[in-house]
Length: 120
Image 1 (spheres, one colour):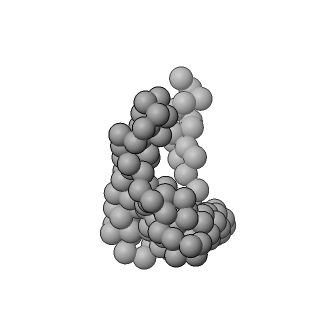
Image 2: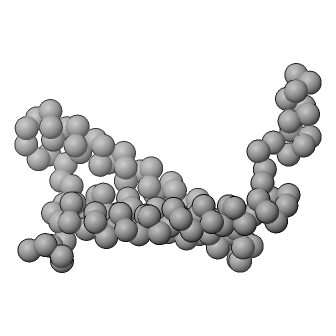
């Protein structure tokens, strides 16, 4: 109990106390954003559900990246939170679709065709 109180009193895992931690946080969010953009481009040729999951992740990381600069703090944080919720919902649909389609050996829940922009 004493350790928990001390942990909370000192701010827990918060890295917002110093600028060095904020700079590291910005670098991490930017790195995830770049990786996620590449994955989103690749997902365009797999199926639409995966594409929308990764597109929502792009929006989330963009919101968190802007939030780490304290730019429109409330709006960017809310944007990232809503995108994260939508990522979870679309991911659950994708998981359920793959599971049900595999079990029944036919398409009951469609995942969508690839966009066909890069590969014809």
